[in-house]
Length: 438
Image (tube, rainbow, N blue to C red; front, top):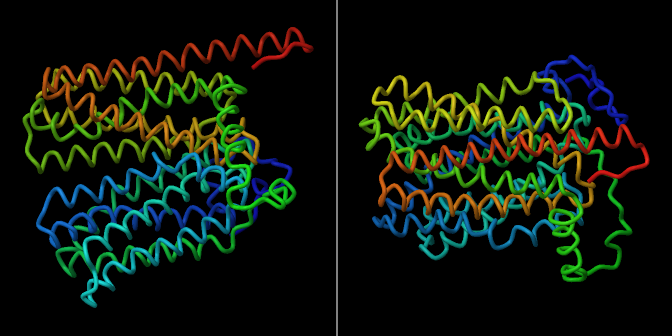
């Protein structure tokens, strides 16, 4: 792969270059390839592991424990993981995490074949894998601005999101076919191999990390944890008003979109009156909408913070209106189109937020900021799923759809108002060079 201007340490790039040209660079190209394979493996794991546990135990409750164990690490350990992540180089961390995930997943079918896999051991391996995955996400988003020039971050983050979209579209189908042909336990071998390939793809990558060795010199594993945690929280909640507003916006967004995705089967059955086959098509429509929007975002001009907030606001407003419109439809084809629109609108959110965080956050705080966002996002997602799940049972699915629509429209309004605040603050700086803006 050729090394183009985007890899320059000076951060220059061709203004009108398409986002896809990032894939021609050695560093980002390898990162993208590894993550595409890894995300397909992650989706393989989600389906195959749940099926394997259900076959092994015959208990739906014991199967749901797997989901709980995968959810707990971001909630319990996120901020602490961020502290340690800011003390080390990101590339070795990502390689190490992928190799550890390879080992953890490989142990499940190996122990099963040897007759040594108990339910307790399985839960331990699942929980350990979830912890490592909690480390990898913030390490990856922290590494992207150290690989890609600043003015190409939106395209880079959008391309990273496409790897997740591809994984969601390809992984479950491949996993289902694999389970039918070779068994769930053998599909896990394939899953382990995808993480190993991802680790291999990371080795050639050059990360321009100016790590300050003196920042943590002489510190033990537990030294300065409290002060480092407070420094991260102070940056997010006190020092940077923009980061705080992004956190509030992301919290609202997570409440609404997680509830919609979680309750999509309920809406499909009760509101649209469709069966499992049509539900599968609706899921595919959501994924296709997200993928197309992510690809489209790679060619969008990056713009300043105010422009990105307005763009994000418009996308979320379209999604909120589409969610509300679902409640008045009974035609599956039209519903599929609307769900694709919803997927596309939500796909605009994360890359833009990541880009703003990467620009605003000093390198030595990136891990703490991204783990704080992940923890807040997970907590608000659980609140949204529980709250709107209760509303769907108590008031009705259609009313729950209306509530989700309202949340997304509130998120859009918040982003829009914040864009005006940023524009006003910028105009004050331009008119009064000596003044300070948050």
